Image 1 (cartoon, protein in one colour):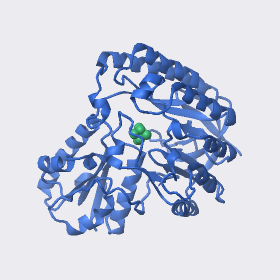
Image 2 (tube, protein in one colour):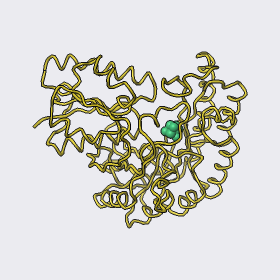
Image 3 (cartoon, protein in one colour):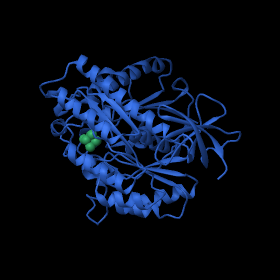
Image 4 (cartoon, protein in one colour):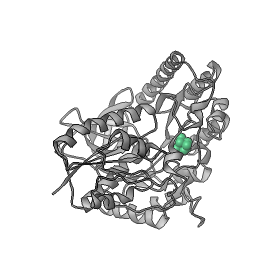
Length: 437
Ligand code: SF4
């Protein structure tokens, strides 16, 4: 039996796509290898969101040449966002002639066909072909949670982002296919479903059959199973009131909402082509909090976008203090070739960016600690992910609003809902003990 080893880079979308790659390979009779050293096939599922990510991946691909020398029958495949970029397949071919197969995000479904050929030729990527939504089986590795794609691609063209160039325009899956997949997963014991898309709130707009994200959520929330429903990622401009109403209405739709703001300054948001203002965003947060008081909001925020002044950054700090996110992914803007931001004037010096990120992280850390502290003494329902990597008897899981909880348990409670009384908190993490329901 031949074996595969998949190296995955990047976001949840890629993690789930690696599950689909594993699904294709297992259907072909491959089994998973414990390391790349022992594999007959190595797949690099790549990311290109930052140039540093690409440099790292290229380094890892280069290292495989040693394995290929030892085992000339080893098949090396590269797929994902990095290889989907215009001209990159050609560059990869030149730089790493030992690569057997190069696919992008638009033609991943050809992997089985390419493997069947097993020639030393490289497949070519037709970047125009994005218009089909191909249903693929997944070999899932994410415990009690299952990822489910509902929409592919993005129409938004934020000026810092490469995604629309490597994942094409928005294509929604049919509602009946999503409902069938989710029902199958729940029937087979999954306790949490996370709906995935670059902009889930846009779901259905391209279908022209009356589908919408709120209708899909409602349909899924009323399936007759005890489970949690989450979704990633939202775009604030498309987070409409009907979505807020459905999230508020159903207990099984988690009250953790990832609502990336990117900047607290309207001027910077305009340069980023985010198509909302600071005021609109704050108003949206108020509407969410009015109908879902216990919502745990999280965000992505970047500092140092071209032209960001001290005043603009002060607006971001102020917004963070007003919104009080449970957690925030804070990062420094880095230029990404192929995006409009790359050519923008007024790039911000590294020292200024570094100072701003320090201030932003410090401000968010205070808020994160304060919010975590509010959980002390409370009992919360946790869906158990599994053992904490660091300890043999400590399990971890998340609350409905997304807080990570650690607790001891003398039996394997992975995949169960348990009640945990929170005894203490440390930064974003809570610690507690199991109590009877
Ligand atoms: S919404 Fe903006 S940041 Fe998100 S994937 Fe689309 S272009 Fe990129």
